[in-house]
Image 1 (cartoon, rainbow, N blue to C red):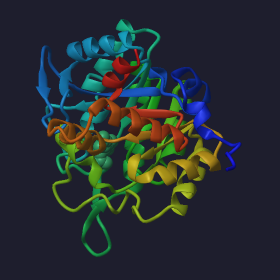
Image 2 (image 1 turned 180 degrees about the horizontal axis):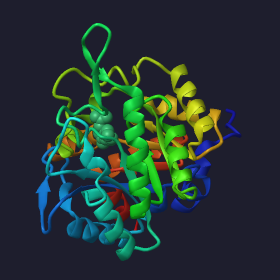
Image 3 (image 1 turned 180 degrees about the vertical axis):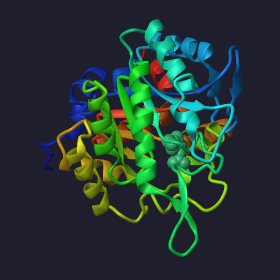
Length: 328
Ligand code: PBG
C-alpha cells in the first residue's frame, strides 16, 4: 500500500491553516455601497424588489451612510431620483438636485469618505433612456451620442463642484470619458477621479434597479448603447478606449454572468478594476433566502469572493451593509 505524499487536505485541517492558505479575502474597504437619493426630508420609500434598500431623502441617506461607515464601508455611489423628469433629463445637472445636495451633506458628515456619483440621465428623462433622443435615418428614435456626451460632461462638473471624489459615467456613449475629463480639467477639477462603466452589458439583471430608480425605458431597450452579452473581445476594446481617454478606474457590469470578462479585463489593464454586483444579483439571493432555499450570509460571501477571485479590486454591491456586519 502506498500513501500519497501530496496531501492538499493537510492545509485544510484547522481554521488557522485554512486562513494561512486563503488566497482571496473580503474587506469592507473594497466595497462601495450604492444609495438612492430623493428630494425632501424624512422620506424613505422601500424598494420592494431589493429588500433592505429604500429611496432616501438626503437627511436619511446621510444617516444610512453613517451607519455603513460605522461598519467599515468607506465609499458610496449616489443615484438621484428627481421629482420631475423631462425629455433631456435636465434635473441631472441641477446643482440643487438630489445628488449635489447629498454630496454636500455627506461631505460634511463624513469628510474622509469616498463619494462617487453615477453620471447618467436615465433617472432624469421622461422616456427613461440614457441620453437625448433624435430620429435615426430610418425615422426610429435613438439616443444622440454627441449631444448626450455634452450633457454628461456638464453633469460631471456639477457633481465635482458639489464635492464628488469620483464621477462614474454609466451611459455607454462613445467618447464620453475624454469629454468628461476635458470638462473637469477645464473647470479646475483635475483631481476628480473618473471611474468609467467601461463594460456595461444590456442585461436582464438590472430589473430591480429600474424599479429603484424608476428608469425603465418607456419604449425600446438599451441594446443600441449597452453591450451585447455575447461579446468578450469588445470588452477589452471598451476598456482600452476608456483608459486612453483618461479613465482612472474601469468597471465591469453586471458581475456574476460576466466573471470571465472581469478576469480578462484584470489581465489586460493595470488600473483598478471594479465590478458591479447589480440589483438582480442581489434580488436573486434574497428571494431564494426568503423561501428558505439558500443561507443568505454564506451565499453572499461566496458570491462576493467569486467576484474578487475573478480579479475585481473593488465591488459595488447592495450587500455592503450585510457583509460588512458579517465580517465585523
Ligand atoms: C444607468 C444605470 C443602471 C444601473 C446603474 N446605472 C441601469 C440600466 O442601465 O438600466 C443598474 C444597476 C443595478 O441594476 O444595480 N444609469
